[in-house]
Image (cartoon, rainbow, N blue to C red):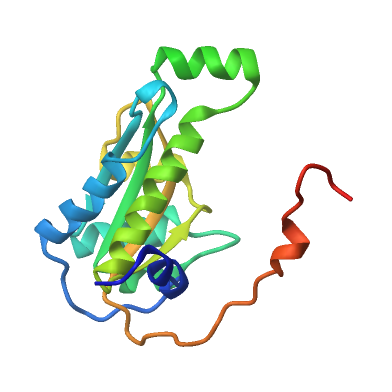
Amino acid sequence: MSTLNEIIHKRRSVRNYKDMPVDNEIISAIINAGRLSPSACNAQPWRFIAVTDKALINQIVSEGLGGVVPNKWAASAPVIIVGCAQLNVLTHRIGETVKGIQYHQIDLGIAMEHMVLRATEMDLGTCWIGWFKEKKIKKILHIPQGWKIISLLTLGYPEEVSTGKTPRLDLDEILFFNKVT
């Protein structure tokens, strides 16, 4: 079994998937990793829609991802997870008013990253999609009015495994102890 550090180093954005379905039990295990993540005041505002129907995936890609960044590659994914936040959480609304921070976005980011790491552990690939047409996707999937789509996550078995390293800033460029100097 891989260590968390090995999983973090292994994770890559995947944009080409094998034409191979992902079992519902595996999808549930990945979503469960998100469910177990922390949230502000334990409000758990997340709601997830696992889209596995190929016709719906193609409709999301053609109508909901078109535009400046079309992301047509997403059609190769056997699963698109739509990460939504339920907006009627009182503590989140108070927090946003007082602090100006949209806690539901932070909560969804944490939950979805837990899912990314769990998927990586299970030898599945993922890719975050943050550029989409929310109204179109909400209409396609009949998402309730009080839910906001925060991001999409493609999921599936990678067509090829990347062994290259993605360039990262050195630690001394981003870490400061006590003061920025």
